[in-house]
Image (cartoon, rainbow, N blue to C red; front, side, top):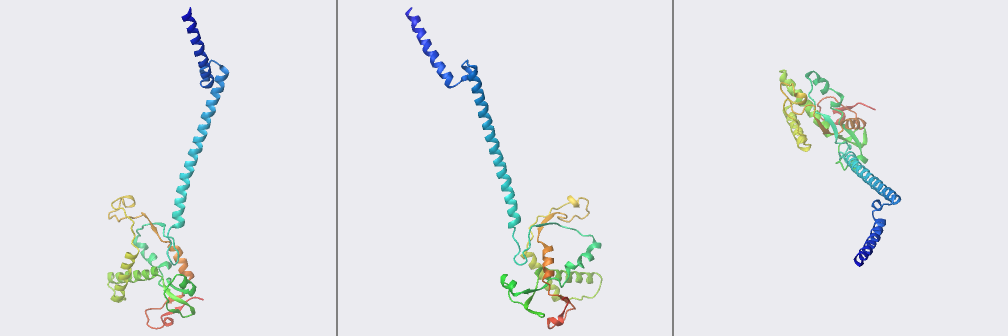
Length: 261
């Protein structure tokens, strides 16, 4: 009988310890329905809280990525380098075009290609702000100096070169001396080295050139350009009001005539 009594005591102690562990830990296995329900609710709430925290973290991460991308995109737009003098944007996307021959004359004779457009009269405030060298005085306003915008100087050269090519092609006498044409060729060469365009143009019979007999590289491909429209407006606003009356020597008043105001 003594061994049996010892076993019973051991069982009582074990049951008591199990009861304490059940109350403290796993109520679902304690045999108490009320505690099991409470434990189930606790687990559900803990899961819901964890899910909510996870959703918040994911939302914050997505917002951070989206905001970072937007900030980087905005910084490209807002911090894109501007030109020094007219402050032109340098990220204007424009396609590389191939004109029909019938459009050559209208394009070359457009107002944007005018010889006089790039001759501007700038006041002393602008000259000092942009640290420009002094230039010839504007005959009709001594407070201003006369400058020629580089773009329009190059356009002037292109027009002369085109005129020479057309005269040669049609058998006419050359109206522009070789020295001037050589000067213009050198101006354009310097332009190419000063503003090298690093756009890789596609090659082959692809894209808009798929059916072309003689495919040209990069046609209709976009590239980043300067804001010519703003330059055109700025040149008009600061126009020196000169009209070319021919290649004449001497005083600017004789070489040009005032054409506005």
